[in-house]
Length: 379
Image (cartoon, rainbow, N blue to C red):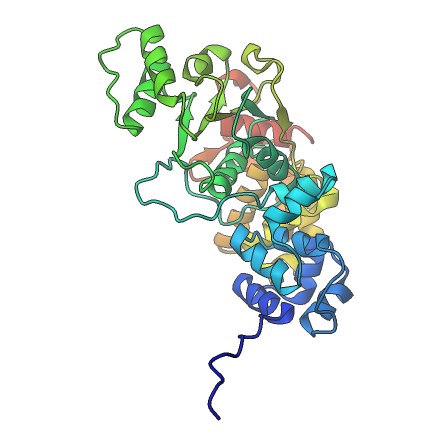
């Protein structure tokens, strides 16, 4: 039978759209319900077509956030359930809580230009949690004007750099002039200023003094819709000459300190170790060890996480060792940690090492070593 050329194609059903998305992330209905904190019966009704027009859009947004959908994917999910797209929901809502939920998706979905500046490090495939922090950061960053810089603070090993990296990938399309990354702990200010200028095709090498080179770079950044991430800042002097004028260029700074002069009056997002209640530690183990193995050893892994203070860097190293080293199991690793909880030699993995005696100067340790020292200090 021939198809009527005037017939309007049927709109995709919620069950079909959600089913494809679940297939892409490799989740079951139960996993989506758990990770999005949605009643399992709600997800089941969506998938079986029992509910095709959910009254509320909020559960759909929670599902989209859990699956880390982009704006285009989320709009398709909403529209399959006969709800407005994100941009229109944002304009209509008056609730700050609703705006927080929507803000994480307010990134333009325009085509990414091949020559756009993007200097972030690779995103971790086992990144978990931090949904609240990401939503707060996006609420600050997805603006046209930035009167202050934004601060990620927290102890070494807590995941500040990892969080900044994930954020960079999620907002890269919004910052059309690019995302710049400056390591304050490994490069001097003059070199970083040159790196920024070089990124935009400007040569500032003729400016031999700090003040003039800084002024030249401020002029370059003044009208750029860009995000500058200054990582691992220990003192205000490391960052203050890198800052652009107030305007469209946003700055995110990571630091272990909460009392820097440069950060006064600026929004600060504290990056703490994972909370036991939110299951992020277990989710990290699941990503690295696999769902089945992590579920089988859930109680043992929970004890390991408690011993390590739920510090993300320490957890990822332990999970990597359990996953990759022959004859290493969660049970014997827990036994080892419990038996050697006074020894920093309990954690060593490639260059991330905690081989330091208690008599060594803490100040002389690397950031990674300090992170493990702090994690093992909960003993």
